[in-house]
Amino acid sequence: MFEQTFKNIDDILWKDAGCSTELDYAEQSSWILFLKWLDDYEKEKETKASLENKQFKPVLDKEYQWSSWAIIKTKDGKVDFNKILTGPDLKKFVDDKLFPYLSSFRNKAENFDTLEYKIGEIFSELKNKLQDGYTLRDVINEVDNLEFKSSEQKHELSALYEEKIKNMGNAGRNGGEYYTPRPLIKSIIKVIDPKVGETVYDGAVGSAGFLVEAFEHMSKSKSLTTSELKTLQTKTFYGAEKKTLAYIIGIMNMILHGIESPNIIHQNTLETNIQEIQNKDRVDIILANPPFGGKEKTNIQENFPIKTGETAYLFLQHFIKKLKVGGRCGVVIKNTFLSNTDNASIAVRKQLLEECNLFSVMDLPSGVFTGAGVKTVVLFFEKGKETKNIWFYQLKLERNLGKTNPLSEKDLQEFISLQSKFSETKYSWKLQIKDIDKSNYNLSVKNPNIIDTQDILKPEQILNSIEQLNLEESKIIKNLKEILKK
Image 1 (cartoon, helix red, strand yellow):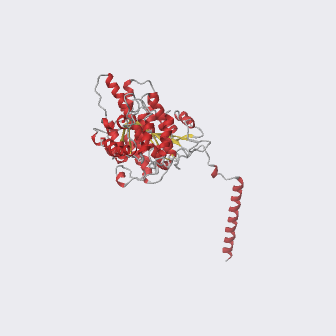
Image 2 (cartoon, one colour):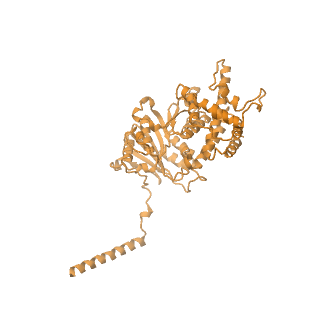
Image 3 (cartoon, helix red, strand yellow):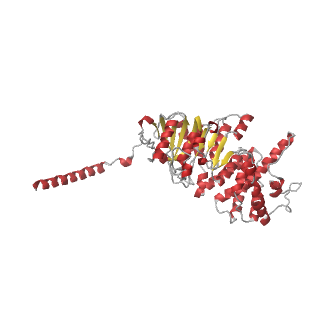
């Protein structure tokens, strides 16, 4: 039923002139889904308070609650079509009253961690793009069919929402930056293995894939006490996201996966001067796929000891500073980071090797990221120990990856198995840091077990080369003889 509802919503949005891409569909359905979730969440809290004979104060004023404007029902539970708004009246209410009211919460909230602040953040920069109030009414009617009450319902909705995020990535444009393939995320998390009680951080949250998968991993790692579950939901997962659309999608994704109060702030992580990061700000685990290829302004670069316009290298400096001693990190980065010869690349590599134990590097094939024609690697490191040697793994597949043939968990099973013991095979090997060139700290992924056949000449080519050398030698001798005669 829920799957059909999601399809119906997209079909309705497709008809509206204000929505033209998968990104628009995700954005517009997300804010409506959020308000329906909030209504179910508040009802659940109200029921619990009533059973405990406690007072309950809803977050939203009566006029702006879902049951007062979106779907108004009679006492017998039927929709009261005489009272619900539709068409121009509905659009006017949403644009002129609902959004301004909800956006005002950002200024009213006591701190970043409150639900009120997140409501204010979501609605202060987001806007209703639906141009037709009748289309908006149809979407609201469909969303009202969804319920966020049982764990089974939330699980199904979270799976459908993940599919929507995946479609955003496949749609191209900038949608891909919000989606990291889930099999890759799960494999990174298995290696880093976050434990209940550790704090997990992503400074480039996107759709919050790393945080929700870490939550799944940690919640299934053992039988949780009530206290441990509350810790997981409220004091474990942290992050920041620069873009409004990604921010709301990330929050919605975490909520649907059971993290009811996501500790995500809406800001550019790189605006923080890393010298100001104190012990209280540090975390145990960092999992991230920061944007790469971006060019940060000079004022942003001033927040970092190693100045560079490359966004990913600034994030890497931030992550090293943000980790506690003994903290672990799994981060996706362009493979050129390992070999670039510019001063910033060399300096960041030097810092990474001297301040952290870079214990593993996974080299990924092209096509892992749909629509992004770049090769990437995953860096796994622990802060507080210098690197002595690195275990490299080259992921070799017998097929080309793409939209219709994405990366799967099966593709990464060998990596997980070999990495646990740092096993050496045809496509995995160790690099001793004492053997690298300290003038450039080059860590190029060059498999010593594979001879580059392009560099090996065939016997016929060797003979031709000898023959050519003999001809050139004969010419030189002939010319010398002519000179001597003169």
